[in-house]
Image (cartoon, rainbow over all chains, first blue to last red; front, side):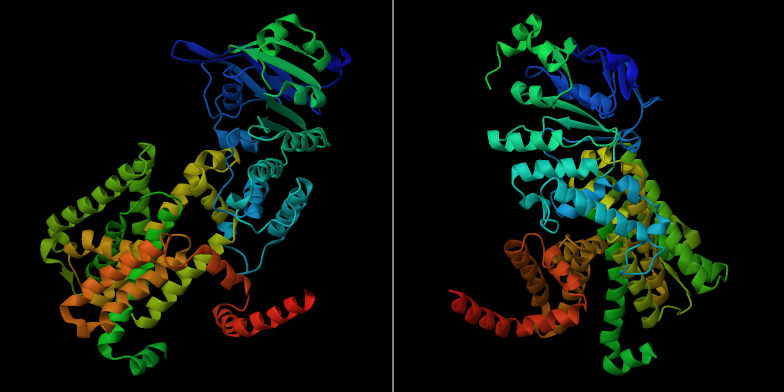
Length: 263
Length: 315
């Protein structure tokens, strides 16, 4: 689809992004372009550098070389919380919900960007009464919980949810910040087939308003159903990029990845 | 008025013990704050010491009004906590390393005060006006509780919970970790300083030795006993473990054994402490507070039997 190239702007761009651990280049010279309103998938075998790439983009790791731009802003050396505030939200491969907090509180933390009125104004209110802002944030959090299928569980402790529920909670929490770009790091890891399909359905129903999704996925078949663009990574390098159909017929990809996939 | 009421209700001895314990509860809340976000800052005796000494120096040597000295004590406590914890956080100390740094901080403060003759050195300091009244202590304690309640219900309180549960995930949610931590440390130190200032103007005689390891244990043990899930645990723990020995005087020397045994029993039976988050949430959500909770427990049995009748009808 060549018209994509010219029509829309670029939301996230990495240029020659490299991260070395000792002698190993976990991410090597990766150029990536994520456009608004697209679901962009990154696939690759285990250890290909997908999660490292995510950690570089979200500021949890510093790149050895290269540049990351997000909506016309250089975010290469920025702290993770500032990157999040710029409009980039993520989920984690190994689930990291706030276990001791309630399901609703988790989503409210996700909405920190909207709820943060500064330290002082947290106290400049009537006790036991929520501010206007706080009520809005709560209402939206409850909507999001309903959207991901966790309505009615708001007051349960997050740790009491089953694995699939915690994953949904992570998605709701990430969406709560109203991000321009949502990064999903293997959202179906550790799930059974029907749970995986539900998550994918959720992802497909996502981008309504110019939001883009960058998704790392292990399960090739699932990705082919949702992604607009697929980038294939192997040994830290991008070996192919294109529509799902193009990728499926790429001999290099078949050799590197599909030939050894067991799922 | 409240002072008169307390005096008529309690023996002078019991009143004194209660007031000292209430002053320590303010410090315990200060100690609870960093612990609640999983930061082992246990330097509260040091923050109490700087609060006590700075306020006493102001009232005795400069004739500053007590109200100003009290606030100053809180500010100094907060600033010292901020410095200590900034050092610890910047050096990426975690867990025990953090604890050691904070213990070191109050030991350093203690030694410095012992050798500083301007504030009396090891002999201590006296001559403070008797400015701390039971009412004032209760007011400050209520303000501290109000602060914590407001904190819990705000985005800052949620950010603290997130930091406690998973720092990196919290960061990914746009929470400024360092800023939030330093706010918590400073508030904790401030409560410690206020407690110290109140103590100094109630005891009217302070020595560096008071603000040492014993004070840490007297605060830390009840916090663990009461539980770290909510700040009410610290209050309940301090009240029980602080006042229990006074009602067990007939046990003479054995009462400390009793206290220790009670702590061990609680830790074995309820590892998370006496007061759970759930209990507090239930009390809060009952809306009308503790009284109606007690009431609902009283009628719970009746209700249960009613439900049993209904269920058997449905079946």
